[in-house]
Length: 167
Image (cartoon, rainbow, N blue to C red):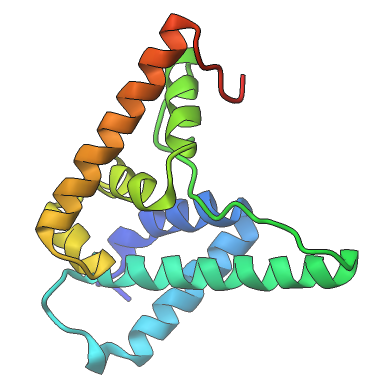
């Protein structure tokens, strides 16, 4: 456990950004660490320990969200949509500008939002992101470029008053 202790807080923030609940996020991190410990023999040194655990946390968070969505659907007897996109509120100062940017980032498709988060908020290298997303570095760079272009377009449209999304 000494090996993963430095990552615990970052993993917790990631889980919480996805499940929006402290207790659930804490359970997810604990489960991820146990799962990591049990499957340490399967660990490939291609990526770092943090990247490996990060992927486990994401998968466990998605599993919990799916389970909750199914339970809610059964309870309400109708299909519910759960937004699984992680928030960035814990990583940014909650000012007007950052709140605006968070809203715009949250409007991105998940493949673009994910690379923005991993690169700029988790400060991961292109190589680590590629390993985590199981794609090549060129794909990561392409998605990042496209995400920034979409954000730029959204912001410029807002400034001209042509598009006001989620005000």
